[in-house]
Length: 148
Image 1 (tube, rainbow, N blue to C red):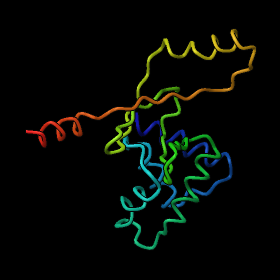
Image 2: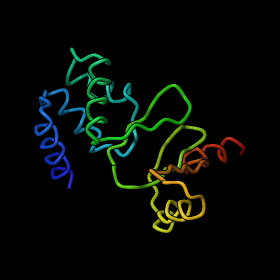
Image 3: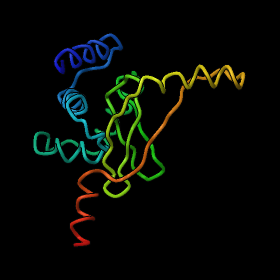
Image 4: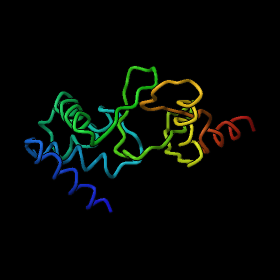
């Protein structure tokens, strides 16, 4: 599955005239295999051993290109660091208020929100975003452990 996604993404880059540098390939592959919704700094740190001469700016430039081509999406939650997601299917996110962990969530009934909102409001809806917040299992467990 990941190989197919990577092939499709590389094909999109080629068709767009974007060179497939080793660093760009590594950033793309990292995003496609990561379910963590990493920041640019996290991607940089994960790849710095393999690419010691790569800068954080290179990671940001590659993320911008991948985003502009519709291969990834940028997630902003009001803090200073964007997170990046290679899952381009419509889905939602559950975010831990303590550690910042982000988990994908899909519930088909929620997909009807746009059409209902459009009918009720008369707006032409382009998209929507929904996040759920709480504490992940690890943080809930740690809080319980600390209280004891």
